[in-house]
Picture 1 (cartoon, rainbow, N blue to C red):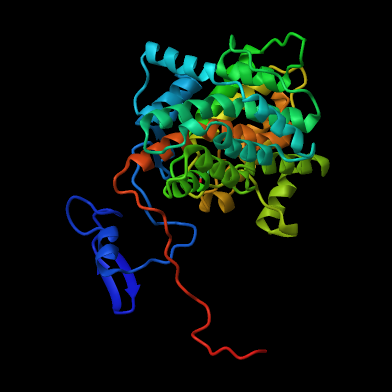
Picture 2 (picture 1 turned 180 degrees about the vertical axis):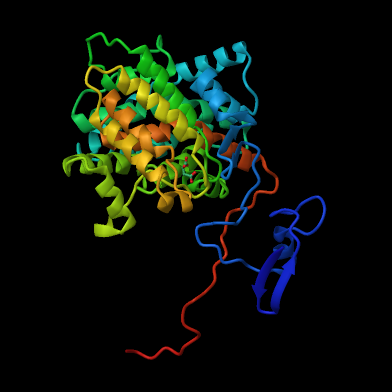
Length: 422
Ligand code: MLT
């Protein structure tokens, strides 16, 4: 039963589904037929699109890409295979995967003029700002793949993005530490190449740690899509004006830049460091959170969709234990994080509010152990989310129902008034 207030009185009706279902009246249909508008800041309940890519059941803690459970993909698949699955809808055959990887490999270089682009940024620029500008700039250098309605252009821009974003991301990092940029080494795999361009130095051999590469590949899989989150819906909204894929994805990078979205794992790490600096008293920190003392917040807990353990968080926690466990001197912040989780999950305050660790809670610890500075955490999120953005943009462009996005507003300002100078 759904009750709706509108100027004509209160309407109530059974809900078959939140959108138009095959039988019965859905809210979507009712709103369409009556011209009513729901006030829904933050799109809390508005189904603004239909999508066949990612399924989430937040109450049960389930996440699937194209029907495949995230746990199975994280364990058995590779990031490029998952990218193919998200973008094209099916798992690739071995030959399709090889061809996809080869095409990406061939496009990993940046235009020479584009390399110079990086010289113009100040050294202390946030790598995420550099990333979004450079992704946007791709459409200036590669003008032959901008038509959203030409399938060969869309294929080319898909491959170019998948190929060039890791190069751009590593250059954004090199820029921030004042080191020269490295050309991609196409004898390496996707993640290995990115690690070498990020941590290698010219004329010196760089041995990629296979465990590190495997874990990073898995983290990219976990971040590859998450249905209509802030950055993805931004990509769709910008794309709905028929902006090209590069422009739409750079808008997504900017949306992800925000501390509430992509910056959350950085905030978790800073919180853990603060607890450590204050003497490591986790129980007292939790008390402060509950008493809302000094604006203290428990970062990395709770999620708008998950009212249960974020399935990605469980996988990341295990990876954090493995990665940090094999280090000679494991980061004491892992211990603080685990204590924090244990105390919070045994406390009615957090349990009754359905606050469980989300994907951001343990990821920062792994990135730090791999040698990434906190400024790069959001960039890594963007690398992982890239195939999801591309898949969602392509789905939106190919949907004949797509119209240019235009949220309605409820006007709350002054009624008409006559102009009189003040
Ligand atoms: C994500 O993966 O995008 C985040 O969990 C945020 C979200 O889904 O809203």
